[in-house]
Image (cartoon, rainbow, N blue to C red):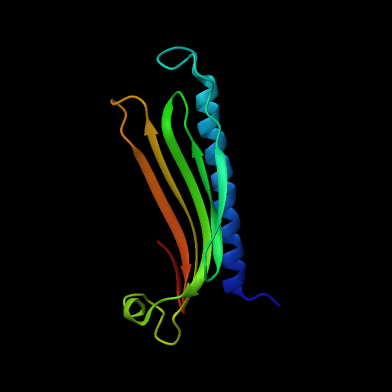
Length: 135
């Protein structure tokens, strides 16, 4: 039987993967729809994905696109687990009984070619220790 914490971890991790896929699709659509302006002669950007593994448990995927609207976009996801160091452990809620953690999250950074458009950045994660929270 799967406990509630495992269900929440699976749900969060799945949601971050789905959100990454949706965001990448939207960024690629914007690239494809450019009809005029600087860089229109360039091919629309497409995301390249690279997987990575974390020593100690887990890993993630880096998705990077360079395009004609976006100079560079990164949409990165990860799901990792491990143990906090004794020094760091005291700063994290829910680590009184165990230094173990599990975390899954997404990070998005978009740099446009136009200097008139600000950089966009967003990240969130679901963290599980003896407690759990989105941060």
